[in-house]
Image 1 (spheres, rainbow, N blue to C red):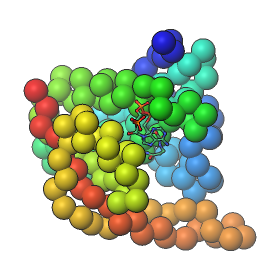
Image 2: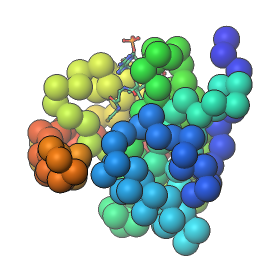
Image 3: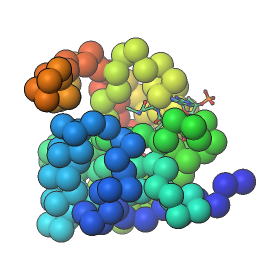
Image 4: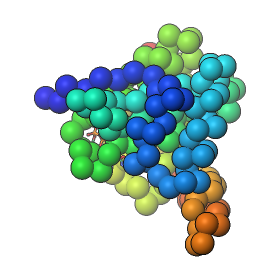
Length: 157
Ligand SMILES: CC(C)(COP(=O)(O)OP(=O)(O)OC[C@H]1O[C@@H](n2cnc3c(N)ncnc32)[C@H](O)[C@@H]1OP(=O)(O)O)[C@@H](O)C(=O)NCCC(=O)NCCS
């Protein structure tokens, strides 16, 4: 059993999460982390022996009345060992204490393992959509990535 510590990520800890993506992603992550001071967003991090190994973001504003889970990942070497489930357990607790009873997320259609994890946890597919974000492109440019996603939802409690 891994000794995982789950706690909110502070803006000053962004360097510990460089493994989560490239320059464009980290700039986006930093902006999102800055919104945690207004309680619009909460980022939970997972640490193993002092190393940051997982992260998930919860946005309390983008879908009014609902909590939106995004930017969820666990370091590649230690996926499949329960860290993601621990992050989701804690995220659901944090959402409930704020009096919110629905959690929504988008998952890429091709990401069948993540979808299976969500379904096991009681998430239901609500339809399809496109989610777009900026990524590093060639020669320091950025490119827009358009993902085909399934929208999923879970009622809490
Ligand atoms: C999805 C993810 C955050 C889950 O974290 P985790 O620590 O691996 O999750 P757990 O160990 O608690 O649960 C494992 C389950 O997650 C799912 N899963 C999704 N992607 C996985 C991966 N790359 N490796 C292992 N399990 C994965 C599987 O359903 C797995 O169950 P299984 O072992 O029966 O196949 C993590 O695997 C990850 O970072 N994947 C790549 C990024 C991603 O897909 N993020 C979600 C975007 S919506």
